[in-house]
Image 1: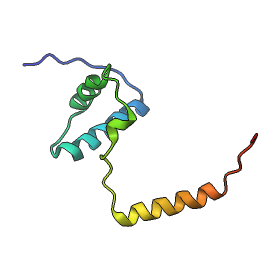
Image 2 (image 1 turned 180 degrees about the vertical axis):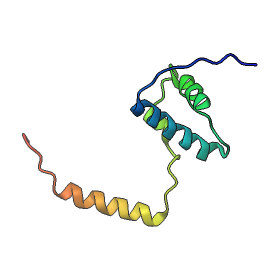
Image 3 (image 1 turned 90 degrees about the vertical axis):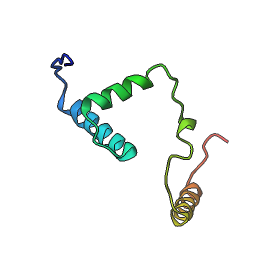
Image 4 (image 1 turned 30 degrees about the horizontal axis):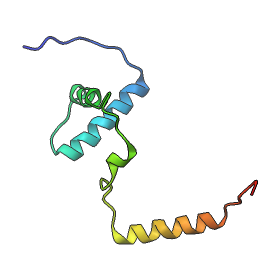
Length: 84
């Protein structure tokens, strides 16, 4: 049997870890314990995870893409460039 230890963490840390476990559960399609979520986070350390690693991970419809682009275009019109 695996030896277990008790660790004190803040409510905020517990909530965030629970969110991560939930996200993993949705991705892996099986129940994920907080222990498994922490082990997953440990595997990310030192891997140099980059924003480009997320490319293609967002499941979005064509309608949502059009809506996002329209919203960005409208917002960009309101930008004021200073110092130019």
